Length: 56
Image (tube, rainbow, N blue to C red):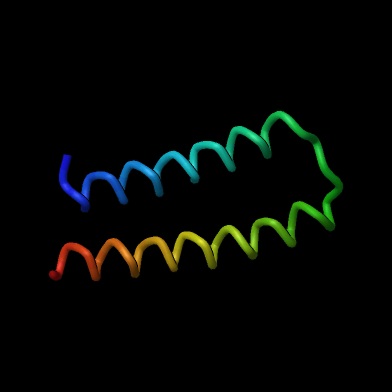
């Protein structure tokens, strides 16, 4: 397994785990909005990392 595949699989696993955790644990609207902002930043960061890895 190449390093790019390993990092991609780890990132995908983290995202799937976070989504599953959010679905199983109901939270208040205020907490949901805060998590959503953090998740958007996380997806932007993951996208930047994936772009950098593909560009190598």
